[in-house]
Image (cartoon, rainbow, N blue to C red; front, side, top):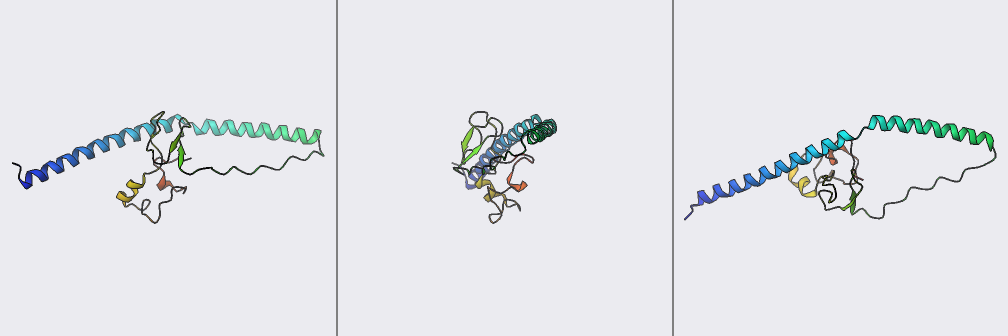
Length: 149
């Protein structure tokens, strides 16, 4: 028969193994997110966009010279999100439920910190009065440079 102390040791051992598994999963997630972030070459992408903007501005100037009286239509307003209960995977664009912690398709972890984690954490970013999933603060995002969509 197990004594109270043996029972306590078993509970601690089980909790420790669970925590080790969780840390291992978090390490794998961190590695996956870092590898994904390294595939994003924002410098080249930004340079390409700058070149495209210059080409479009040049074309616009040419069209204004050819058709000086033509008035462009008004700029349409940005569509409002139909639902805040989903997030979009930045890697494969798959829509996932807000409660999902990773993409079902590519297995990339969600960039948002799960609510349960914010309660357990206690850091200045996760304090209950400062957490806002729609916020653009770096503390809400697991990996700097990427934002929840």
